[in-house]
Image 1 (spheres, rainbow, N blue to C red):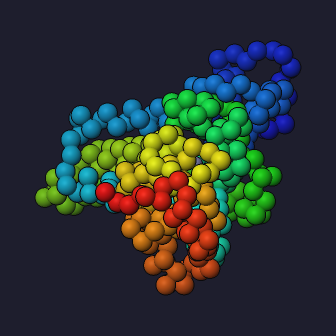
Image 2: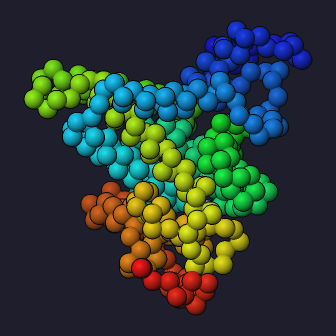
Image 3: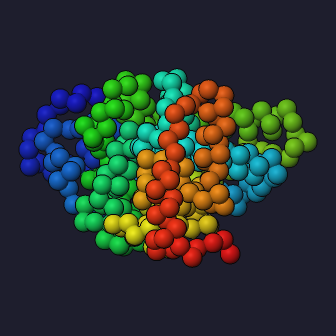
Length: 333
Ligand SMILES: [Zn+2]
Ligand SMILES: [Zn+2]
């Protein structure tokens, strides 16, 4: 693979060329071939070959028809969903994107790896896109707004477009100064691949040495890799799509963000999306005592161990503003 390899301009790529380019980009998401247009200049449309890993992920769930289920396989899938959702919400979102608390370099790396296993690409790509979302929420430049681009595009379409595949390193200088994070981000299929191998290996151990559990290698793999990761992906994506159309608005923010109990349960506390758009600098998204925010509780516990610190609170003025703003009558049903 040579990034400096020249191809004659204007000559259309054959099938073999598309295959090689796609394969190189799977291995190295920063790979750019000279002579091709800058992805930022491309139109917003589905790029099928770049989307194949996601299609593979969804199709893999269908294998449950053949492998069935068992309490151990389903339990492991749920456990890995919760742990990895916490890595996405607590670290990809509240730490890398919004810097709402501080931590050490090893801890940020460990949670970056855990988040990366969710097949939501690297932490730098995720944070760069998310900061962009907060800057342009539900305005023309927002890459995933259901108000501007429609529900399906805001949910999954934007993720399939080549235009949105590159990482804007210059918009996240505070993160791109860490070479280990840049490495993870660049080779963003490595961790999901390793995660898959670990699930296969664990499934083999359970099938071989603990037959009484009734788990097969294939069954364990389908539940912990395909189903757990696919549900996790859509749970997260609902915050881009559903949390901007469905739910209640407490704050009159410059976007269509909403608060929703259902999304809160699915995403361990990210459903208080209107709160979050009003004040994204706080580690907490449930602003009232009754607004369940499991990610915040998890981060609070981590702070007691000393692994993270300087958790940024919600200013009193923002809480007070919520009591007199749009949804002052809101209370749990
Ligand atoms: Zn939003
Ligand atoms: Zn955010």
